[in-house]
Image (cartoon, rainbow, N blue to C red):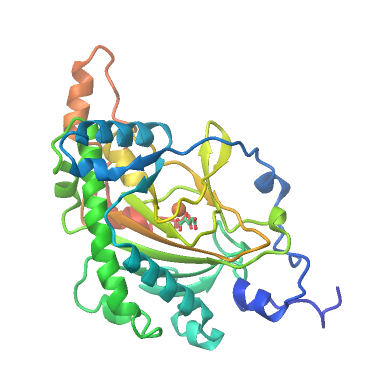
Length: 343
Ligand SMILES: O=C(O)CCC(=O)C(=O)O
Ligand SMILES: [Fe+2]
């Protein structure tokens, strides 16, 4: 390809696709290694759990068991009847879609070379940094909870309803996260408020991911294999599937279930559970036909919380026939989230 016709990747994935409608190949440099792309894919079923059962005293114990089993075996589950208002979910998704539709220059207001910037717009396609370098994804990332000082004032002002709707959405997602934290605590044999108490004021990271249509989806990825650092990730997608979960060494695609959330355990809950509940690797693939939008909210402990295996679990284990070693070191959440970014 001559340099005049070589597509410009410097403005990210969406800009490239919008401006080269006839693009039939993934630009040089964006083709990922054969090893990264050739891992086996298998069909299996990520558990679908009716979390509405947590609200019903006759079904609570069974629902807690289902959640605990999913956290042990898959680290993931699809949550239905989760209680978050569907018009609110739809509104949030539409505002994120509108944000990505803005002119490039307007989105660039939020770009920065500092990865730790509290609000960050960028593209993995045009970046050669980090584990997702040259991947087919544009993103907007910012902090949510704790809502102090000027947290929300840093968020985008366009679309105009973005701040207000996002704040309401994050509060609802936090309620759901704490409901699930209750089930996870009970699943570990603790009282249902245990994890919520440890999380304290809590923290949230908002990751809005935009994956445009890709001419050669087999040659690239949206996001490569990683685990989430926080506690409980709650992810909503438009009606396009793309997430894959590592299960018994193979990649298992998660089918889209309308109105559901994809829930996964992050590193903090794995540490707190001393490895009983798994923070499992996942990745996002892209496709030729439809753009995919995924809004992932990482719900974690407050930044000053020391994340460590829960002492009750350790002492219980050590009384048992097989002494269970403490598998993780204590670490302050703030240091854990900023240590050598994996993303
Ligand atoms: O977009 C997805 O489906 C996955 C995104 C993800 O794993 C993340 O943002 O941590
Ligand atoms: Fe993730």
